[in-house]
Length: 251
Image (tube, rainbow, N blue to C red; front, side, top):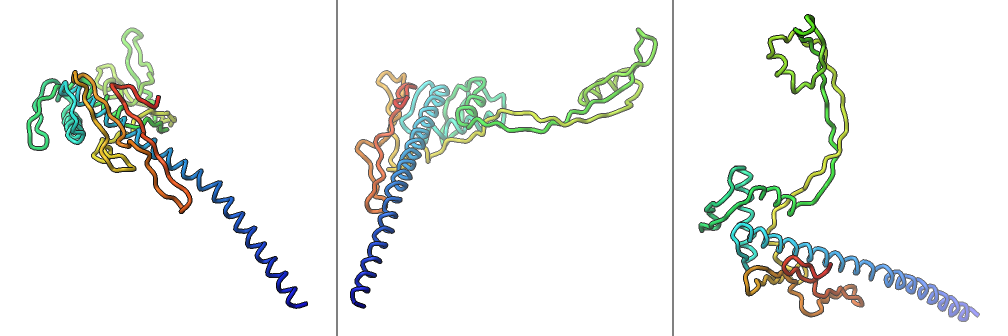
């Protein structure tokens, strides 16, 4: 009798273990693939972000030199150097000879290059600023009225009124806070990291058209890319696309 009870208990324990393992396996088969799909999507987004950046770098390089360059690092260093020069001196425009990485380079810097650079290599954001407005009450003598009169002016204009011969006195000051939404760009500089595919670490392919008038930037992935995940799953990635003469393959 005791042996039968032990066997029954053993089978019951095995059944419970089987149910628990089945439940765990179901959870894994539901959530692990979802996590892998999200990882694949993130890798694709990052890769396409890099492709877009390289194409934009080539576009700025073309604006400055009237040419493209298959050496992405050199193109990045040049446009970053021009941006730094314009930041240091806003009048640094037009035809210039710039010394970059040990050599002189002729460039033609257009007006607004810094703005175009910051808005291209930047993330649009919104912030809420607290602004303090100060209003002053002053007394001015008005000849046409033949008497003193009070005026309300902004604090920043006080020095202008104070210098006038008919200024009499400042008699009051009132400050008020207000909230204002401001749009701005959180800018960044392109760097060497963006030249490499985040999965294979291979350089993105930069090809210049035969007529030298356009450029193509493409993912280096040609065959299916795979990485093992949790023994029975795989991370997969196909070619992440290209931009050819401004036209993106994923639009």
